Amino acid sequence: MKNEELIVKVEDFFGIPDKLRAKTRISEILRIRHCMFYFFTFELNMGCAEIGRLMNRDHATVINGRENVKNFKRFEPVYCDILSVIKSLYIGEEPKFNASLKLVKTPKYNLQDGYFN
Figure 1 (cartoon, rainbow, N blue to C red):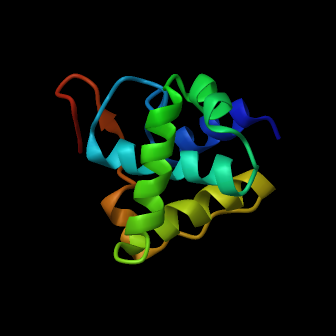
Figure 2: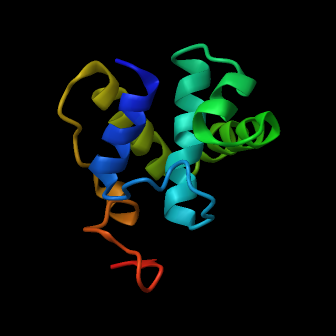
């Protein structure tokens, strides 16, 4: 699977079309984006500059985001659950919906009002 396809699948799963590469700092989207940085780095062995080009960010943002995941996944199970979803989508399995994903997976992003429903 191509990396661009994975991004689209993750956006579709979480109901945030075209948001992972956008310049938004909404916390729900940031968590998912940072988990994508972590997955690309540690599962697919991509470099920070390469990930940055793919996700429309610079390499320092990629480093910061993946370090956030590394530090917070011990205390916030939602990070592990997001990573599990990303890995499942990557290998073509149906992701399991864990309880902590309720904090992230929402019906749809309300573009008009700028918040999650």
